[in-house]
Length: 370
Image 1 (cartoon, one colour):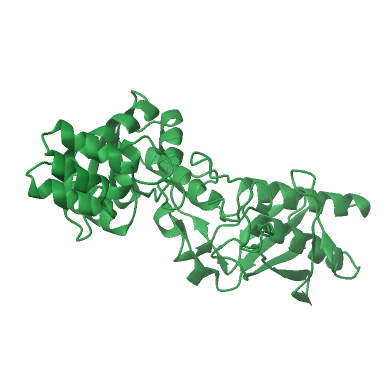
Image 2 (image 1 turned 90 degrees about the vertical axis):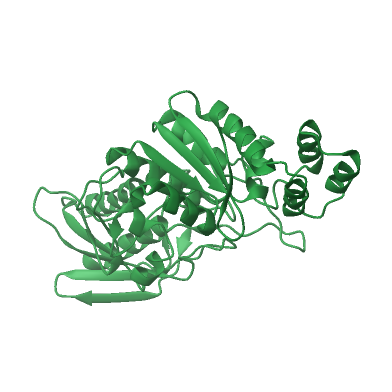
């Protein structure tokens, strides 16, 4: 995996067949918009309905919902995320199309379950429905196409909704990013690549954008909840400063290099920070491992005896090594934090000053760089 942009080589199921790709909420909303507008203009709902994605693919979608009312038509599509563990897999994405103001072109509204932007820094203005730019372009394109076929102006209002979107949004970064009331309608390619974690990388980037727009000069990338809570207790920063980095150190550092913030703190468990100290940028247990010989060498440099060094190289876990070091009176977590700081600083560049803290399983800070 490329931890900087969240893309993977193709993955396989246990039987050797490729994992199935899926469709973004933006692609579903576009297909629903096209079907609803066809019905509004006097035809039947298109079912199945096909659209053209930015990469030229032309998927077809089956309708799960259709309705007509006074001056509107509405269509719905169940999002299929393929084999990706996407929080919105199975969600019903709805688009209601009605007449818009003359000369206004296509306008967008947030229906039930779609959020509204309330903080600066996102690619949409404050007060706008959280329908991202590429889905907007796709929906505008299908409206323009159908309007031209009927010889009319493309002046239509599109309201996008997601059933149970308010509840689903609580499992995403949206509340911290200031997107309130529901989900975002996302997708740059229209395609969900299984386990690409593109949405996670996207959220890290948008979190940095919001922090910069709010004028924050210190952000924190945490590998998990325990490390984030420890950093919050220590640093007392605004909530917008805390970025759920997860395993994607590379994605965080690369984006910060191009969009710097004066100070960055990275907080994580001993094993993940050890991987960062080794130069790994993807900290996931399935994609990188702790090199016990790396830790043994560090401990030997600090005076650990030969017998204990052998115990380190035979240890089962990184935390077992930390216990051996503590018994010998060696501040291994601090040494690892400093090595990790050096690796991160090298990648983020001089515009951001990096600090690293190591947090144990109880949530206590057991080592810091510097």
